[in-house]
Amino acid sequence: MARIITKELAIKICDKLQGVLMPTKNAVHDVYGVYYNNQLIAQFGIRHGSNKEAGHDHIQKALNVSTGFTKQLAICTKSREDYLRERDLLPQLPPAPEIPVP
Image (cartoon, rainbow, N blue to C red; front, side, top):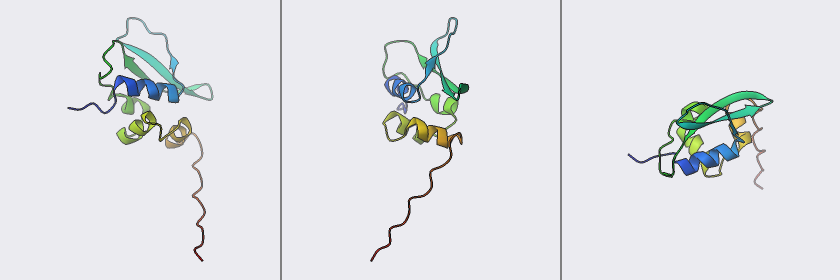
């Protein structure tokens, strides 16, 4: 089964969401917290080890978003602001105005 989210993509997501390393004891993952207004809104783990293909398909559940949205975060089509809007922490953008066709 192909991995949707690899370790490399998990690190990109962590960087994009400004993840903060949280102290843990004897964990098999490095645990990162995502904060908004000094409040923890999500946390997820990135596995130790050098295997860059290691699966991290648990991240979308921890972030409470869809697999597709998580993948878009990793490949740079979604931003931290988009994530905060998806979680209803920022107001939604108004729809773009329609341009009349002459």
